[in-house]
Length: 82
Image (cartoon, rainbow, N blue to C red; front, side, top):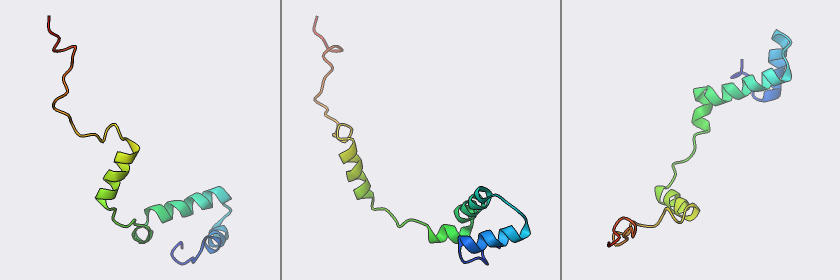
C-alpha cells in the first residue's frame, strides 16, 4: 500500500479507508517504512565520505588530541632524581 501511494497524503487516505488510525500512528508507520524498506534505503544512502576531510575535521574539533606523540617528553614525577 505504501509503494502504491506517491506521497504521505495519499498513503494516509488509503490507511484511513481501512480503519480509523490516529495521525501519529500513520506518521510513525510512514517513517518506519521509509527508514527500513530497502527501496527507500538505497535512495537515501549518503555519498562516500573523504577520509582525509574527516581527519582534518577531527583535528580541528580536538586540537589537543591531534598532536603527534612526543618521545622526548619525560614525566618529572616518575623520573625524579633523589
